[in-house]
Image 1 (cartoon, rainbow, N blue to C red):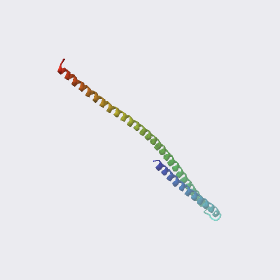
Image 2 (image 1 turned 135 degrees about the vertical axis):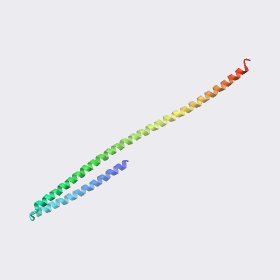
Image 3 (image 1 turned 90 degrees about the vertical axis):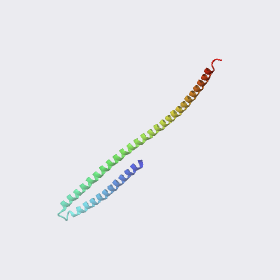
Image 4 (image 1 turned 30 degrees about the vertical axis):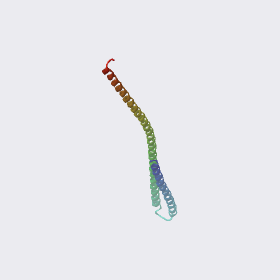
Length: 144
């Protein structure tokens, strides 16, 4: 999961980086247009309306750029949070595996001990039965 989260983060950074580069190119073009427009001011009666339109475009571009930056930061934060949760879960899983190994070991010891105990009880019962048989034989023969 870790490489997938990193891959996603890298992809988002690339996409937003590309968007940022495009924004810079567009901003440079807008600045060139603004400069060209400035030279046309002297020649055109529509200067005020063009400047206003350019300012609106610049404002719209800046708003979009700001929105993309906020979205990117939000996505980055969410990815980092997800990465943190995944790391925590990985640690818990490792701890759980350690506990499982310990429980398996204890269960094996108890199983081995129970098997030995059952064998000892069976042997003791066999000896008791043997002694009971001898005692019964002695009782049948009576005192000699």
